[in-house]
Every structure is written in C-alpha cells, then in structure tokens.
Image (cartoon, rainbow, N blue to C red; front, side, top):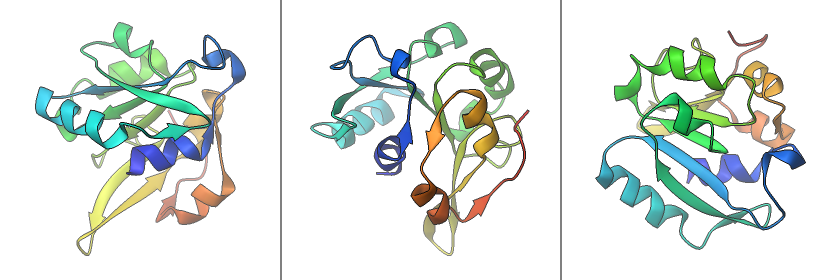
Length: 149
C-alpha cells in the first residue's frame, strides 16, 4: 500500500516514460514469494493513469529500467553501490533499513508502536528530478532536511 501511495503522490518528469500509456515499472531485489505478493497488491491499481508492472531486479544495470525500486533490508550490503549508480535517474527509491536514507534513499519504511511509518529525504528526489507532493511530505513521520549523498 505504501508503494502505491508513494507513486500516486510523486511526479516523474515526462521523459521518464516511453509514452503516455507506459506502466510504472516497480523493481525489487528479493525473493520470488515477495515479488508475487507485490504483484498481487499492485494488480489493477494505477498511478497517474498508469498501471504497475513488478519486476525482479538483480543488479544496478537492471535497476536503471525501473521507475520505482524497493529495497528489502537484506539488500543493505549492495545498497550504496546501486543507489550511487541510479542517483541522477528519475527512479523513486523505497527501503526498509536504518541506513537507507543515509545511503541516498528517498523513502524509508519502519515500525513504530506496531504501526508502519515512513520517513522521507527529499534531497535525493530533487537530484532525480522527482517531485514529492507536499501532502505526502506532511504524512511522513520524519523529513530529512538537506541533500542526500
């Protein structure tokens, strides 16, 4: 649900998509079961009139072909290299580790009082030419000031 809502409240530059009907490609590093769950959750949903396509990503080169990337906590060791590779590309990045924003990620998910919350670092989004709505920024538990990485 968070990925879907983030995509609804983030604007990509027009040239990030091949055409007006191109889907939002969500890439994730993870196991097949998680990817299947994500596909089910995003099925029949749209953001900015675009459907979602979920792909398994295994390296930074494949990540370049996505509009959004979700990093599971298990990917911490590869995180800095991948985020550095895609830093200037219009790719929304979402993670779930304590170091995600420190490494240049945009949105980080975490639990607080048994509730799933998020924090945001708008600097990396600006570098990637993504516009995060002020409405979404107000919902964040924490907003990190300044640029990322």
